[in-house]
Image (cartoon, rainbow, N blue to C red; front, top):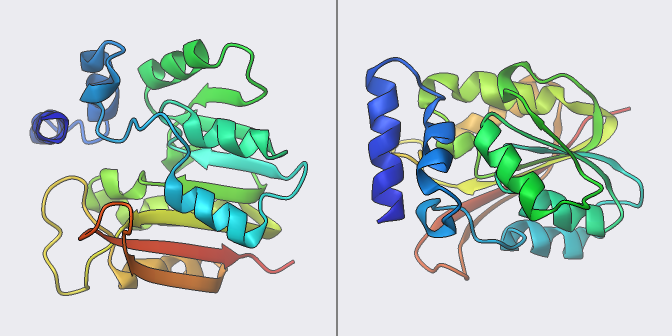
Length: 215
């Protein structure tokens, strides 16, 4: 039901030309009910967690940004691992909810748009945000994520995946392998691109991209 509701709200906003306003509308509709928000798992994204454990990242005191942080679980988990974390979301309601959940947090939360957010970070984290943005924004959004990576910094993206010839379907719109070429054009070198079936949710195709900007 929550995914159907999210798709309905997204469609309504797209029809009236407010392509990104549906995020805040969904969080307001939820009224602090986690079950209404499809991605509100109240835990560290398992694919980010597995990657952090495997790569031993983030490094202590790494300047880290979480793009589209939602209710803050990824940001808090990264801060608990010793990172200095900044987290932002386009939804004021989501940021207020995150601050309420973690009143004593060391994370710096702010309301901001990925497409215009400034900064340079040692680690840029993007989980399930690009896939939730309408396709018209995809190239700009990926370039914006890449633009946050400082010289010598790294980026990790976790998302739903599809083939280049597969239809995008409805929100969330999976990324295709060709979408990641934007990182190369933005000066990011690929360390690893993983295309895998989600062992936690079998039958769902996932991508995990790890890149680095040369010093």
